[in-house]
Picture 1 (tube, rainbow, N blue to C red):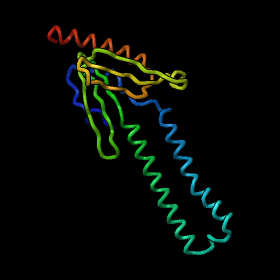
Picture 2 (picture 1 turned 90 degrees about the vertical axis):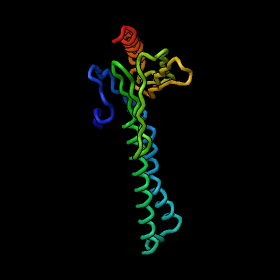
Picture 3 (picture 1 turned 45 degrees about the horizontal axis):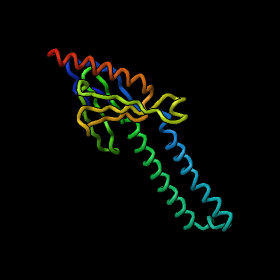
Picture 4 (picture 1 turned 60 degrees about the vertical axis):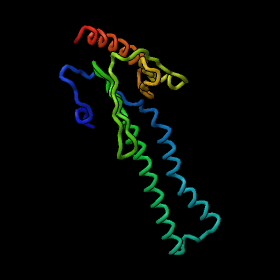
Amino acid sequence: MILRNLIHQKPYEKIEYFLHRHPITFLPKLVLFLLIMAMPVGVYFLINNLYPGIFLEPIILSLSVLGASIFYLGIYLFIYAQFVEFYLDSWVVTNDRIIDINQLGLFAKSVSEMDLYRIQDVTVDVKGFFRTILNYGNVIIKTASGNSHLIFFNVPNPNEIGQALIQLAEHDRKFHHDGG
């Protein structure tokens, strides 16, 4: 992904953070993928034990191979779509704004931004054993309006990012208050 094609960087703007979800958060989908991939093999052995010789029939063997091929292609497409969505969801923090790039399936994305000087509150949410040990969690950014907020989901080093956002917001407020 070429970042300059997604955001139009201002001349004075400097990228501070380019964030993705922690890689460990994709592991449950990968494990599910591997379990589902093993299902046709298990079904084959189950049917072959219950009805020995059934796969010696050319029609049944052909239909089984066709069905398994369609199943595997569907599963590959599913895991590919999940990986694309996982990998392309990202957040860009500059010294002026936050850009939220949200991948919506294979062929759609949403890009939104928030000015740093509008940030009122930053909350870091790290709950659970694995999140604490592996140091990842959510960073929730709120603005003065009650319904406007942004969440960085499952990012590494959330405490560091939360502190950096507060400092960047204070610096940006001074810049906008002084007239830039």
